[in-house]
Structures are given as C-alpha cells and as structure tokens.
Length: 61
Image: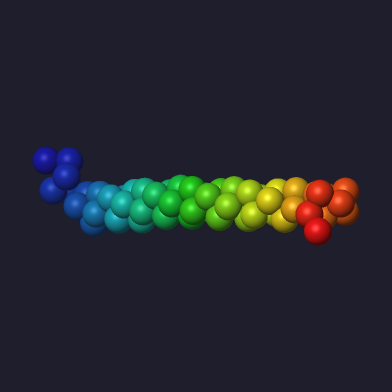
C-alpha cells in the first residue's frame, strides 16, 4: 500500500541508489587500474635506476 501511494518517490530513490552504486563500482575499477599502472611504472623506473647505477659503477661496459 505504501509503495502504491508513493510510487514515483520510490522509483526516484531506487534510480539514485542504482546510479550511486554504479558510480562507486566504476570508481573502484578506476582505483584498481590506476594502482596497477602506477605499480608497473614504478617497477620500470626501478629497473632503469638499477641499470643506470650499474652503468655508473662501471659494471656494464
């Protein structure tokens, strides 16, 4: 009975709830991808620094 009386309010609340859940899910996906990319870039920089220090130390000709 309550739903029949305030049907439009319930559908608006439901839509906003769905939209907020979708937004949260997309944000989580973005956070995971961004941290993975950051991790890969850090690894690449670490290898580059290691190679550079070995070159400067004279280990690599």
